[in-house]
Image (cartoon, rainbow, N blue to C red; front, side):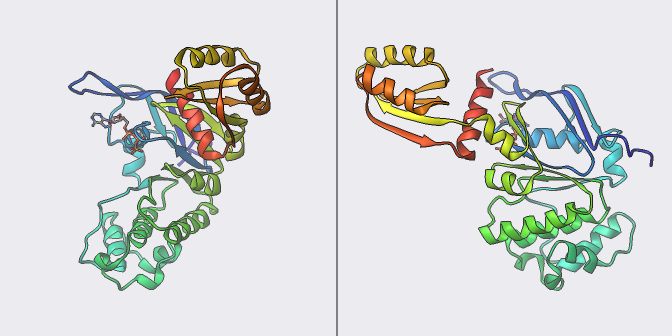
Length: 309
Ligand SMILES: Nc1ncnc2c1ncn2[C@@H]1O[C@H](COP(=O)(O)OP(=O)(O)OP(=O)(O)O)[C@@H](O)[C@H]1O
């Protein structure tokens, strides 16, 4: 198939609206994204950001309200039918009474092929579980089995929707080791996750979404750098004094955001010392604290900014 020059995934102006009793919900709100063959991309976002809805459209399970989805240069339906895109979902798809090996063989039969289950189980790192009943496998082992099943059609694009939810640390580590080893062979992998450490450790590129839009796109280090700086927090008990302080802080150079939580102010700024100095010298603030950003903060900062747009 002559699709070598086509992007693995191309989303243009993608919108998905759902009807609800309180009016239409825009789950995906003008999402643009181009992913090249061989990239390992984390699709990161808080609950309700639109990750699953986007993946459903890529798999042809949901129809966009507007915009387009191109998978490997064609439609999602063609890519799925040709086995060129496969998915590992969080739940479902397993028959509890079959063994692990039988499950993979059955998957092969669905594609009209007689497969050697061991090949796929080895790639998923669960060869030793071949004869175990699916019902007896842990959640993490079942996820690696879903991964083995997804490998059967040898897809060019593999989608994983929050694949490690509920797994313990060791289970997650083993799961990602198997995915990374497979991705090293050149497969394009896109995974949705809430886990920032997973995005940081396993993705070449992090696409952060919030309210159905891309709010940051780059390496984990680049995305973290977007929300560099520190958060200064302090309490100002008097409402009027706090309102005045908010206005002054907003005008201070390098202040990126000021948030009010009860009597406490949270100030995100490049120069945390200047903010602390201002609070202590020019306001009635007390209990001043300065905290460094980590990826979690970057995530909160960026997704909150996205919500303000
Ligand atoms: N079938 C539906 N009908 C109505 N609203 C929906 C439907 N599916 C999703 N939504 C809404 O669309 C928004 C995006 O949901 P989606 O499941 O895509 O987010 P997500 O990023 O995958 O979240 P999570 O991390 O919680 O799985 C949410 O507000 C959700 O309530």
